Each structure stands twice: as C-alpha cells, then as structure tokens.
Image (cartoon, rainbow over all chains, first blue to last red; front, side, top):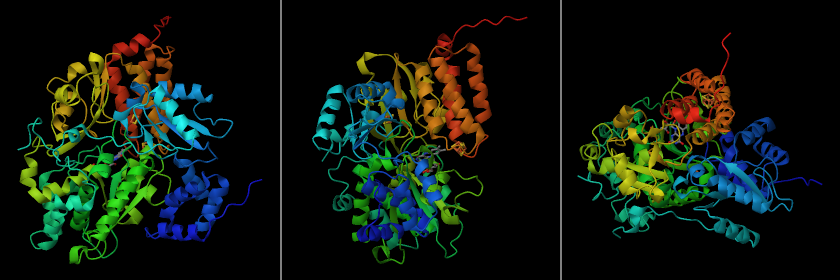
Length: 180
Length: 429
Ligand SMILES: Cc1cc2nc3c(=O)[nH]c(=O)nc-3n(C[C@H](O)[C@H](O)[C@H](O)COP(=O)(O)O)c2cc1C
Ligand code: SF4
Ligand code: FES
C-alpha cells in the first residue's frame, strides 16, 4: 500500500542549496524536513527515512528532531489543519469558544481528523497574534484573525471550495492616519 | 525631543507607505548609518561602533533587558576563524507579537542594524532564526534580504569596502524553548532544542563551538537609529536607565489592541486608557501582565504611576520582559488564566531538568484541580513549595518563567484562589 517515497533531481538540487547555507550539513535538518513536509504533506517514518538517507544522517537523529517540534506532522493529517490558539490572550478573548464551535461544526475533537480526511483541528499555544484574538492558523501558513462564528463558517466553506485564506495585514493604529 | 507621546512620531515603524521596499527605505535615510560607517572606518572602527552602541544603552528587547553594546564587547578578538551573529525572531512568549511588525513594515531597518552589529563584532555570517509559524513573515524578510544583496549591502565587499557579510533565514518548527538563546543555537545546528549549560557563554562557545552573539530583532532595529543620530540623542528618548523607542504589544480586554510604538517609560494607565482606547465594554481593569506570560501579573491597584521601564516595573513587583502587555478586565478568572499559563509551560518544557519537567507538570495538574473545584487550601502551599523547588535550579530560565506567574498570582489574588478551594477541615488528633 505505502508507495516508496523519493526525491527527484530538482528536489535534490534544492536540498543541496539549503545545505549550502551552513558550515555543517546537520544544520539543514529543519529546512530539509520543511521541504519534505511541503512535498509529502507530513514527515511520517517513511519520509524520515528518506530524509536520513538523503542527508546521510542517522534515522534516529531525524526522528529525534521531528518529535521535538510541534509543526512537523508525524503522521498524515487532514488536508487543512486548523490550529486554534487557546493561549493567554486568546483564552481571555474567546479562543476556547471558537475551538468548541469548530469541534461542534466538524464533529471532531481537537487532535482529531474528519473521516473524509479534509480537516484536522488542534488547540495550540500563542501564535504571536495576541491583539487579533481569537485567531487560528491554517495548515502552518496563513493566520485568520478576529474570529467570529460567521468568519469560521466562511473559512470552512472557502477551504472546501479550494480557496485558501489570503494574508491579513494588521495595520498599526499609528499608521492609519499616518503622514504619507 | 520626542518624549510627549501625543506628538511622538514612530522611529522604528514610521508611517511611510511601502517602507519594506528597499528603494523607499533608501529614500528615507535608509542604509545611511551603514554607509557612514564604511566611509569613515577610522572614526567608525568596530570598537568605536560597539562603544557608541554601548553608550546608547539599548536594552535587549527579547526579555532580559541587557545592554546590547556591552554584550557585543564580550566577543573575543577575531582569530581568523568563523564567528556568528544569531538574530532572535522566535517570538513565542505568550502576549508578544511585535518583531513580526518589523518583518512586515520595516525589514530593512533590522537588516541594516544586523549588518552594523556584524561589522562591530567582525562577524561574516548572520542567521535570522524565525519561528516556523511566521512563515509568511519569513518570506517577507527573505525578499528584503534579496534586495539588500542586489544593492550590495549584503554579500562580498559591502559597498566596495573590505567588509563582507552574509545573512540567512532559518525557520523553526514550533517550540517556545528555541527562543532561549542556547536552545536557538542547538536548533540552528539541526538538533532538538535543548538549552546548553552556561558557562561557557555564547561569546566563548556558540554556534559550532565558535564565538556567537544573540540579539532580538527589535534590539537590532534600534542600532541604525543610534548610529544615525548618535548615542546622546538616543539617550534622550525615554528614561535615562531604559532609553529608546519600544514596541508595546497590547492585547486582551482593551478597545484597540495592537502594536504601538512610543518611548520607553510610558505610563501604564496612559497606554491602556488613551493609547489602546480604554477598557472594552466599559469594564473595570482587574490586572495586567506587563511583558509577556513570564512576567508577574500586577493587580490594578498596583499600577498607579507605574511606567513601562525596568526600574519602575521592578519596584512595582514585575518586569519589562517583551513589553507584551495583556490587559484583563474584572470578569477574568485568574485561576483559569494562571492554569492556562502553567499548561503552556508544562507543554513547552524541554524536559532536560527534573525540577522543570516535573515542576511544570505538577503546577499544571494542581491548578487544574483547583480550577475544577477539587482543590484544597493546602494545595496553595503545595504550589508555592513546587515553585520554590524550581526557581534557580535549572539549566535555563523557563522554570523560573513558569514559577513566577503562579507564585505572584497566589500572593496577589489569594482570595480568588481560596474561593475555589474546598474548605476541608482536618481533625487534629
Ligand atoms: C524560555 C525562554 C524563551 C525565550 N524566548 C525568546 C524569544 O522568543 N525571542 C527573544 O528575542 N528572546 C527570547 N528569550 C531571551 C533570549 O534567551 C535572549 O536573551 C535574547 O534573545 C537576547 O537578545 P536581546 O539581548 O537583544 O534581548 C527567551 C529566553 C528564555 C529563557
Ligand atoms: S529549565 Fe526546563 S526548558 Fe530549560 S533546560 Fe531545563 S527542562 Fe529544559
Ligand atoms: S495568545 Fe493567541 S496569539 Fe498570542
């Protein structure tokens, strides 16, 4: 069932470029894992093995790194991973309400994936968007801020229709009536 | 001088459209500090640049408030082998969200500051460590770095001088601890982010065993200001002991939560009531966390006359930290809040030291019990005892950062904690 994974010639030249930034190849482990996760959607044991072989490093070392960092997916996740911040500022500004609403809406709990493999939900730590609470991050990429139930509904519909959220710039109030 | 906040014009993040583009940045005095230094190397030898920055007393904006120039001066004399500058853009302390503004709105100010720092420490390679969740911001910075290479501010022979420097971004992957400087270096070397035992300090043995300095992004963004206008000018912004502009990240129950730039030493009540538009829904202020989750919470009645600088906050019983201010209104459940902070630290402890690994776990479990109504009064003493066994007994400061909010909240909001505890009476035999 599980097809063998591999890097093609273009991947290998990208990986070489990533490695060239450092005096020692091991330093490229995080960038290469990111590269692999972008390509395969996760870094499960089969991908870890591929990375280890490609970089000529022990598999145990790659496994150790993958398991230390929360953004590396150790197993396949839903197509869209919704990371809802429930930390400090988000906690006191309705982060849990948004999390529970999403859980109810998608019929799964935080840490789970919908049976159709479309969505995963996670409750996560501060994402550095505290003033724009409550908020969530979509699949390690864009932030969706100032969440309301309506905004969550819209986001789910957009994602189902294949539309990714855009980058939300949060202007500084001091820029709003700025000089230029 | 720009000390009246009402007329203050931002220096780190000025309101200039498209300032992130190098051509606009150059038109607005950008890269002039670097040019000035490279044009007159006699006046601006690496030692003299370091000493100017040291005089300006830029206090580290990553949380510890250490004088940046003084830190640079700890680097040993060059020995011909590599040495490094690592810029800390991990920004994972709950309540903190300001370095991302620099990446988005004024990345070249930071890049210029980092180049000057590299020059002053005679470093030829700069790494910028940015938390993995900030992927869109990493892309923004990368674009700015490419522009700086094109214009000859980065790369071989900067502006025709004999000074060469490279800058690379390095993306984390979700780990608060990687903001701690030695953990950051481990992560950069491609390892699990376990903090290192100090000494040796990074200036002696840093990245790949070579001399390394770690500075926060906002700290480095202050450097071109000092070099353009001089340390004397810089020292006149804000309080003598804590000078310069500060990015205040205000979140929680205020009407206009956002990042604001004002001089250090702003009055806290002015920041809450005037700058951030006052309390949401006309509620009463209950408490403030002044500088990220690690800094002890202050009760509203403790804030009278307190200003956002190291001295005033220390006197009030807290710390400046990252100036990420979390404002809480009268409806906030402090036990719930402190439990959630403890959950964060238990989740983020790297697990190397027993007092931290077990301590953060026990703080979380005990607070959960209390918040769920199953706690007893003696659990409050247990919490304090756990804090005592964590503080100052570990490899890095995460254990202290986890203990302080608990210790000080029990002290400052004791009644609220007691109200949640069962009044079990033990028979004395
Ligand atoms: C647990 C822990 C987390 C930290 N996280 C950060 C961070 O996210 N960003 C940062 O700049 N400094 C962080 N620091 C502080 C760094 O260790 C270091 O002091 C700082 O980056 C130095 O830069 P500065 O002197 O310019 O502030 C953290 C410290 C600890 C103990
Ligand atoms: S104090 Fe905690 S986070 Fe720091 S090294 Fe020890 S176990 Fe790790
Ligand atoms: S607390 Fe949610 S983004 Fe900071």
